[in-house]
Length: 390
Image (cartoon, rainbow, N blue to C red; front, top):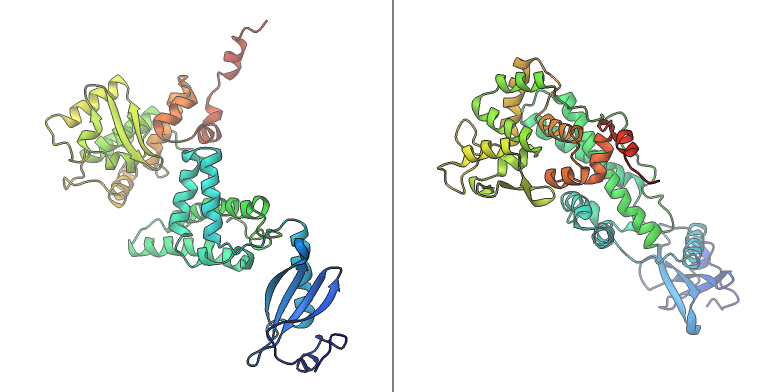
């Protein structure tokens, strides 16, 4: 039998001399830090770390079996664990999904629900209830994150092929751009788990996985008056009505497609839309009020406000195909439906509507408005010169 003084855990031969028992055999590595070896009647022995805690008791942590870790590797892991504990790392067994949920909850608490909405929706689609989300944060490795990022592009391209979409290159760029935004949200959550929650000692599990390079394009969808008229004139009547509604409100195409006849209140001139930030009420201009009043006249409340040529509700594939045909006729190959929203926001800024109002009416944030459209407000200096402080 190996005595306390004779314990040698360095080799498997030496460890084989330890009689099977539930209590580990411990060897001191550093002041207060021990590595233990537990040998049972069957199976490989396992490594245990031990450090003292208050009250004269010990804190223990399992590190795997001797088939996966040799003595030196196990010692390094025990020492790292002990160092992490000293620096405040908690080593709670939280999964990637757990950390993302905590991050979103804190975002809603410290900022607001609008700030938390986008990452929550991303995580609901891509992390929660997914195999990737079930990985423990402490066990996350760069390949896990890389595979997660790449899978988003693969899925998007596979769907494009099923739909026989001819714009493969642009779809590939858009898929990578979307994956980049999702990766940015994920890293923010994981960094929160590292820096704030102290669940791991470093960001080594995800830091090295970067966003796809060279896929982002600065938003440049402002249509001139001539381009707007050219596109509208080339459209079939049903698409013309949908596009005009976007130009008059700055709404997203999907929001307007979901709108019902009952979404517009003729007596107040308020249009209710349901989009990525939830329900919002939009006060429309007199021109838009006349347009929407005509659209809902003598129609049933739950009917779609804008109908496709088959008298059904518009879908993204339908308006996408119809718009590609339109822009070919108008000779504007780079235009997309989203350009109408961008044009409305740009024109609103140019005439002096404040960004808070624009953000509220179009269902976005002030930060996004300032980031993508701030260069359009050329009157800032002029306005500052009119401020009288002395």
